[in-house]
Amino acid sequence: MSNVCLLFGTPRIKGKESFLAKLRDVQNEYKCVILALDADKVAGEKHAIFAAEKALRAVSENRNVAKNIGVEIMRYASGQRQIERALSMGISDTTSRIALILVENGTKPDLSGVIDLDGRGPSWNPKAVRETFNIGDEEIEAVGEDKILDLVLERVALVDAYR
Image (tube, rainbow, N blue to C red; front, side, top):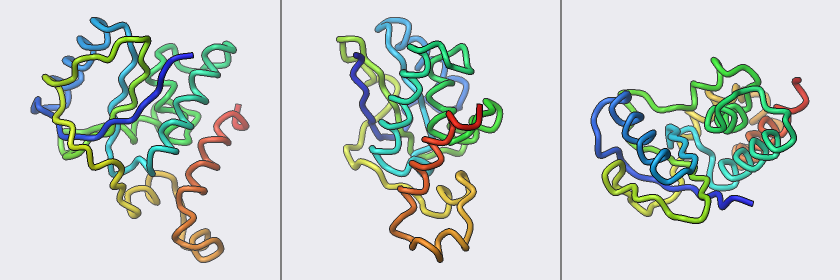
């Protein structure tokens, strides 16, 4: 099984397209999968790892919707079945902090030219997460603000149910 990890930092390359092109170069060189997400929308390491594992399982069982593994991981991470909607989890030109989901195949890629890792871990924005996952006030009132991660994990798990 591939090793999945989550890294956080700031981009070293200005501009979304330039950043993503450099990320693709690293992926190709190291034969790995690297998915860049807006860190504000990632509800912690458990969220990212769970989504990546669900996506990898879907690919191994030929149940994937997306042809690209990174896009399949983004589908699960966003809790969306439709790829176009899933892209809302991705980075934009205004993204200041990035979460990288890394699926290694034995060799750790050199990301020093792409991202300055900050070692801070998850620092998600509850408002951004609630917007991304369409978590309304009624849900928060029912379960409490401290259960946002559980609500996100539920949406990730339900991606398979929406087939």
